[in-house]
Amino acid sequence: MRKLAIFFSFLSLHAAGQDLPDSLVVIHNTYINRYFDVDSLYRSERYTIIRKGNKYRLNHRNISTALINRFLTAVNNPDNTDHSLARYQLDTNLIRKNPEKLLGLYDSRIQVDWNQQQKDYIFTKLSDPALYWENLNYHLSSGASYSMHQDSRNEYRVSVYHKGSPTHQFRSRKFVWGYLMPWVNQAGDSLYNYHIEGAFKKMLNIRKGASPPLTGDTLLKILVNDIVSNDIRALYKLAPYTYQKELDELRTDFSIISEEEVYGRGRYIWNEPATYKIGLKNNLMYENVILYFLVSKTGNTIYSRDSIKKDYADYIKRVQSITFISDYIKQNPGSRLDIYYFNNKGINTYNIDGVNTNPDEWKKHDRWVLGLAEDTIRGIKNKFDIEKSIKTSERVNCGCNFRFEQSYLEKAIFFELHDANDHTSIWFLLPDNKVLLYIMDNQSAMHFKRSDLVSDHQNSLLFTCVLFDVNGNLLSR
Image (cartoon, rainbow, N blue to C red):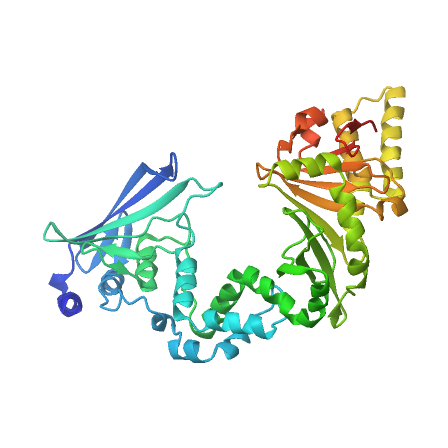
């Protein structure tokens, strides 16, 4: 009844010219972000639209009565508070009953095998209208918050005057960019109607703004892709079911404590095909030691399990024989040691390349250093920091600059330590039992401080590149 009363009260706007408002006052507020996302009013600009006979005027510009009518009719449309999926031409019956058909709209922006477990999981998501509504609101509300590069927000407040008194008031949302809706009227109703801002911007001659919201099949496809993408981590955890028969071969030697497809690239792998991370335990490992088998997709199956079953006992024994590491994890039960095995060895090409690169890259660095030395002899003064440029070249072209033989590093074992402070570090156990601390993610690892290990703090943000013996004594390069 309340909606109908509002609607019929504004029908008179179309029927009788004398019921048109005397004026509309628009306040454009600009807010700035002071602290902790709190708004602080920075500036208010006032625009007064005054009726002059059969038209309206804003400063020296005419505005048609028809446009004022269109704006007020849009504001008072009784359907404005309807923010259902149906308003955007989305069929909830289709959503509830046809998840398999909806999955066909997924554009495979992130590759998924779609084994039966993954399908069963995502079908429950794709048949839930609430998730479509949630993602729709995410798109409509985009641009509402401050960001690193945007420290101001806008808001419009509109008052409609009849015979000198305000009769209706409403305001836009606060926004950095995007839609002005939802508008809020004086009764506190949220109004979702793009036609309001369409007419409003024409009245104020605002040229920029968001396009009309998408609807129907176009919107449906976007929302399906949002739902799948938002659950990609859960789907990756189900990916190993595709090769469950092959992975079950490991159960003769291990308990499988975790399974997932590796999501993303950069820490453990780079350009490998789909790779699965399988957490393994048996009675050879200390309580807080896990062996991770990173096994890649090979053709229609995954890499053979024969190598890890042959090598694991020796790998576990060797790593657990590093005295200073073993002592630490025994004394700190909250720490964890993860030993990695990549298909058929304890290190992969990606990590070898990161720590060592190759002879061709070493030559590039050597030529750069030689060229700088020749510049000095010739009296050429370079405008950049020479020492810094040498360090950068060394890191890019030589990794840790130990210049190990490739065959030597291929026998290394990669392991990762999560210490009692939840600081992570990456290490290599080398064939001669030297221990290379490759990466420290924080300022310390176990009892080692980064500042005690490296002098050039700017270039040691990640790559520590120091050697220890098995007792934890620092070795010279």
